[in-house]
Amino acid sequence: MENQPRPTVPRAFDADHPPDAQIIDTCVHCGFCLATCPSYRVLGKEMDSPRGRIYLMDALNEGQIPLSQTTAGHFDSCLGCLACVSTCPSGVQYDQLITATRPQVERNVERSVPDRLLRALIFNLLPYPRRLRPLLVPLAIYQKLGVQKLVRKSGLLQKVVPRLAAMESILPEVPASAFAAPMPERAAARGKQRFRVGLITGCVQRLFFDRVNRATLRVLTAIGCEVVIPRSQGCCAALPQHQGQSGQARQMARDLIDSFADSNVDYLIINAAGCGHTLKEYGHILAEDPVYRERAAAFAAKVRDVQEFLYWAKIPVPLQPIADGPLAVVYQDACHLLHGQRISLQPRQLLAQIPGVQVREPVDAALCCGSAGVYNILQPEIAEELGRQKVENLLATGAVLIASANPGCALQIRKHLELTAQAVPVRHPMELIDAAIRGVKVADLPAG
Image (cartoon, rainbow, N blue to C red; front, side):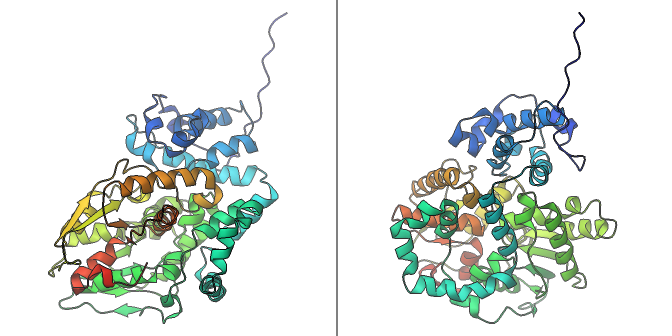
C-alpha cells in the first residue's frame, strides 16, 4: 500500500504578520547566540535560546507544532535584550522575529487567570501617569509608616502572590518631587540658542524619576537648547510594544506624535534607554497606518538619546569636579541602548569629561540585568539570578558609584544592592553631568 501523506497541523500563527520565514531562514543555527543569551545562561535549555526559539517559530510557521502555553513559555522567557542581534555572525534580525511573535502569542494563547489579571494591571496602569499619580499618596504612606518593611520582612506576599511580590520588591521610594509642580512647557536656552528640542518625559520616569528629567532639562538649557515639554504627552509605547500589545502601542505612538505635532523642534530628546529604542522604531510600528506612516518616520528620525545628543553637540561649558577626590564610576549598559541603539562609547566618554571621574568596566557588561521592561515582574525567578550576577560584576570593579541610563535597570540594580547590603548609589549620567555643570558635589545630591 502506498504511503499516505501525513496530515499537517493547521498553521499555528494567524495571518496577521507572523514571523518572516525569510528572516528565519537566515539563521544557520551556529550557536554563537547561546553565550550571550541571558535566559539560556540561567535556564540552560535550547528552546530558551534565540536559536531554539527560531526553531520553534519555523515549526509553528510550517504547522508542525501547535502554539500552546508550553510553546509560548519559551517566547515569554526571552528578555528581548537583543544581545543575540549584536553577536550573530549571520546578521539574523531576531528582534523582528520576536517582535512579530509576541502579538501572535497574545492573540492566540489562553493565559491563566492570574497571569491575565497581572498583565491587565500592568498594561492598564504603568503606562498611564494620570492613572498612576493618584496612587502615589497611599504608596508614600505605605513606605513612610514602615508598612513596606513589615510586608517584606514577613515574606507573606512572596508566599501568596509571588509575582505581585516581585512588583513590590522593585517599588521605588515615592519622591517629594512627584507632588511638585510639573516642569515648564518651554524653557529658554542659557546664553546663545543652538537648538530647539523636545523633551520626552516618559510615564514611570515622570513620576518616580522626576529628578532625572529636571537634571536633563538643566543640562539641555545649559548647552544652548530651548526645550519644549508638552503636557499632553503620555507613554512612548515601549512597555506594551515589548510585550506584544501591538494595538495599544500603536495608539500610544500616534498620541505622542500628536503631542509634538506643532513643536517645530530640531530633535526629540529621551533619557530612558528602553523608551529611546521604541521611539526610533515608530516608522516600523506605524508603517501600515496611512495617516501616520510618514509622520511616524519623520518623528523617529528626530529622536536622540540624550547621551548620544550631548556627545554629538558637545558641552560648551566647563565641567567641575563632583567629588573632593578621584571618583570611581562604573557605567551599566542598558540593553536597548547598547544592543538596540548601538550607544556605548558616548556615555563613557561624557562621564570621563568630568574632572576626577574614573570610568571602570565590569565583566559581562553586555549581559542583561534582568529588568527588561516588566520582565522582572513577569519572570521573577530568571530576573533574580540575572540581577544578582549584574550587581556582583558591578561591585567587583571597586567603583563607589553606578551610572545607569534606564529607570528599570536602576530599580533592578538598587534592589539587588539592598539584598547584598551594599550602600552604593545609582545615578543617571545626566544627574552627574548636571552636577558637574552646576559645581555640585554628588554627595550633596538628593538621595536616589
